[in-house]
Length: 463
Ligand SMILES: *Cc1c(COP(=O)(O)O)cnc(C)c1O
Image (cartoon, rainbow, N blue to C red; front, side, top):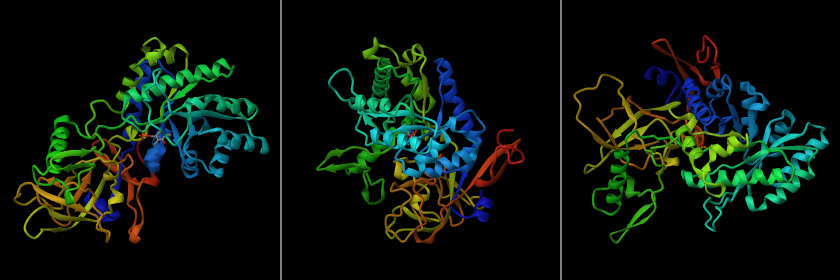
């Protein structure tokens, strides 16, 4: 790790392409257990890596692209159009390349259907396959369970959407419906899936022939192995916010919590670092949920009964343990009067954007030289290299097993999902982190630059 950062600079992202193939296999096994067909589309936006994308292209997975650049990247990595879906806000160039190449488009609303139809007619393209992205699902009762989304069409406006599909029957082919909810709640997602099944019925009753439901992403990652660790930390943070113990954060930051004359207010705005059910297991749990309005039968059974394909779009979950970020320690400074050490890293907060996603994990110290006589655990605050008070890698006080020294590396684990390049800038002319791909070759690890990786020998990966 030290020779890598000596050569390529700090910070440095390391991605592990073979891990994404293993994670895909876990999703596939859930499909098999429920006898469901359909595609797993990797949500590309979670990481820009070419190596991860090219490794995935060598499997049977699909990819979900959300920009022109991502679509070009996917096509260039070897994904054929039948393995690509295009979602999210689209500019005309993105829509054009998607329509021209025959990618399935997840459409947001009537206006987008109109746009696609106009393109198809004007340029005499083949009809474009579309999934209708829906939102605003409700249970059979009055309580609205699924949160509002600025994407998709509220399900109560489905009629209007289907009228547009029929009006554009020469230019679009309806293949199904889709949703993506940014929530950890299984109940909310089950409501959406149930609502989607009802929407498919509505399509069929009009003589349309949809065959798939796309349940989006949001299956999540469990970052911490032990639940107790997480509970202990959040209780201690609560106590600190209430002034019952010394602060655990820079400036007494409460991550959404605050104390008002001894009473706790606000809500904890952190990613639940320990999740007993995440990733493929979360999909499994979703599929086992009973559909209240459809006889209480499991959602998986209903999908199977109608022979619907189940599509999913995991981003973060497919990237679980697919990479880490290394940052070199530049300076270690004691504060006057004691307190946590100030540790400055050769990195910006946006290069290691765990904090942006509310993910709290301690980095691992990788000493430059064999550790001297350890002075025991130390509390530190981790700063980035920008001339900005807010450039903290994390606002949390971090406890390291020993005092780091300049030249040591801090290794941040599990950063491939959204923490590597989603937020990265070139502020102050500081370079964005480079990325390397690493793989195991027998007992040895080998590596190359991310954009040099292809899943063939001698570069490794799928052989
Ligand atoms: C971001 C996104 C995903 C992936 O979400 P994760 O939480 O990373 O699994 C999937 N589908 C759509 C439409 C998205 O916008």
